[in-house]
Image: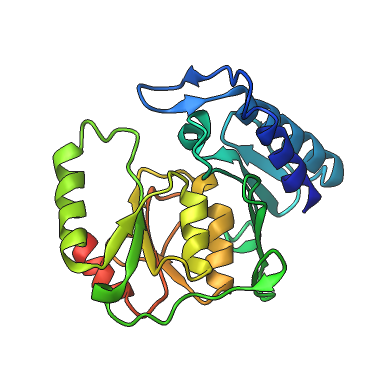
Length: 248
């Protein structure tokens, strides 16, 4: 999707200049790059698909008449971007009215890594097929995670969970982008990933990519994953139950 790549170019243009960073909360940031990227994506999707519904993180929302919904995160990993830490991405997904993922694109412009998938069409990174790992034990796994914006109020609980995970798994990584972390599970760079405090634009596109790469996702209690529910465990399927028991 050229739209995602053009939005990525907009983001990169702000790396070495004033990002006009603002606070949406004590920890939650927004920059000029978020806003300009979202404006570009929304305008182009509206031009190409005028009857579709659109929701985006920074406030653009349009109710359409068709059965299709576009879910947009113009810059996932804003905190990383604000600090020039190169793990951030554009995330664009299309779902139908039954909440089934039809298309997902996640693009990290810094590394020029373009993850994409469509329902039934497989998952790809820069046009090469990707798939989840075959790791069978949590003790051999590399796990991704993230921390919610209200972590100061939940610090003890978050650290207790992290300590349980660290005690069992091989190691843990954190990029600051849920979309990238889920794509890394899809691409076999991580064996699993968990996080709470998420929004649909954080996970919608990457969830499509994960499924097409042979992965699975659930809530912490093992119920079916729902992009509108704020927690996820994503994995290669083989260690899912083990990770779920540790996390929950």
